[in-house]
Image (cartoon, rainbow, N blue to C red; front, top):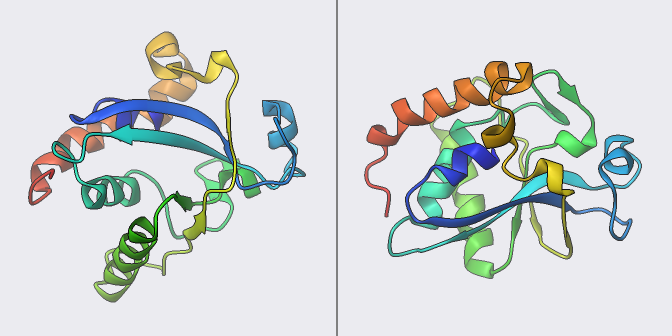
Length: 164
């Protein structure tokens, strides 16, 4: 998701990391164990005059599977759950409304299981996770997982009513 959101106009910073768990300053291997309670996440900074939070939510839901618990593709475990961590009451309200709208309109064949939780902690991932796609675009994971998401984004962006 880092590569997807990094390519959006108005997104000024994307940081991969871990959030939602009980272990302070977790390492990747600890998070992968599934015992920390953390999810692999990205933290975004964005210019709301260029891209709205609603547009970011829309893209988030289109770029991953929000209907399967604890799994993204071949990656399985609680660290791969679909989750939105909000920092303001308005973000919570918008995220919950987006989920309700998508469920009501049956955009996905199953109901959305994305959690909407307050951000209580965020730990920046190790350096090798940052700009992963830019540094490893020929790796199989990048070719088979990230590149299709970027292609989908390129196709999907014009369908957004407007980005702001």
